[in-house]
Amino acid sequence: MLIAVATACGWIGWSGHVLTLPAAMLFPALWALSPSRVVAALVSAGYFLAASRGLPQGVAKFFAADLRPGLLLWLAASASFVVVHVAVWTRQSEEGRPALRSALRYLAATLLMALPPFGITGWAQPITAAGVLFPGWGWWGLAATAVGLAMMASRGRLAAAIVLGGCWVWSAASWTPPFLAPGWAGVDLEHGQNLGRDGSLAYHRDLMATVRRASGEGARILILPESALGFWTPTVERLWREALHDSDATVIAGAAILGRPGYENVLVTISSERSEILYRQRVPVPVSMWQPWRAWSGQGGGARASFFANPVVKAGGVKVAPLICYEQLLVWPILQSMLRSPDIIVATGNGWWTAGTSIVALQQASIVAWAKLFDLPVVIAFNT
Image (cartoon, rainbow, N blue to C red; front, side):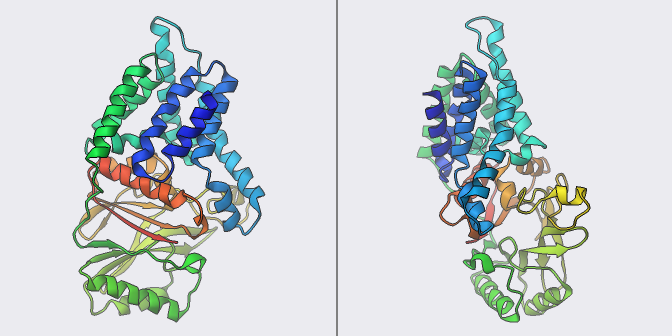
């Protein structure tokens, strides 16, 4: 029963709808009620595998392979989550002060899964629901959610469930989307896997026409998806600056910069006056992009990770918290950015390989939840 309910919590909480995120808050109670480490492991695995269920199909499409590589990566991704929660699990005492152990140990597991190295695969963290339960509360809302999670793992779980359930109902009844930043606009594209891979002049001119249309609707700063510009070269830079010579618009777009021993996934900003690298991705997707073992073995290739670099950047005169694709599923990149008090969140992605899965919806639901928690505008641009 515990395993079945944990699986349902993972499935419902991470369905891609922001208002269902609090369903994941039941997980610590199920974990704490497990009568043994084996059951705790199965409860943790059921929750995580259900929450990340789109991974096998997405990986198979990305690598143009059958489901086997995706299934292996799916199981590997769940390993750190299961190992951490099994390692800190303890049998609950029936009475007395030792009953607090489960609560404190669950908070320890949450912290471990939020920070590197375990945080690199730290998807599906129930604490992401803070933005739904306590919109606008900021760090106080995050602290309240952490306390709620700890209570769910203790003998006070019934009272905690009633309080959190009430907050959930109240929030859902009064829910409004994050507000938009005046003059900012995200430009969604539907170029599939051709995005950024077609370096032809025709491709860039078509993209420029899309930007001009969006600019004509009043946007001053336009956000293009991850990898929209392909490889960032002096030729591409000149082409785009010339295209914007008679415009006061600024374009922020995804691109890749080749270097040794691999490449960097970045956001660049372009205007008629200048262009520069705005942001270097902190956490590229493990395995498909970030492949540290290649450098260890002296091979080239793979995306470089800048785990703690540039959490906030300046664009359009405001402080921006940028998140590229995979970073939107994790906890620590957004919290690292929030420590710098940004004015806006910019989220980009290239989700062509996730077609038929809930991965892009999960990314966007997560970003919306964080934006609501800290009461910030958010601009989202994705390619599908």
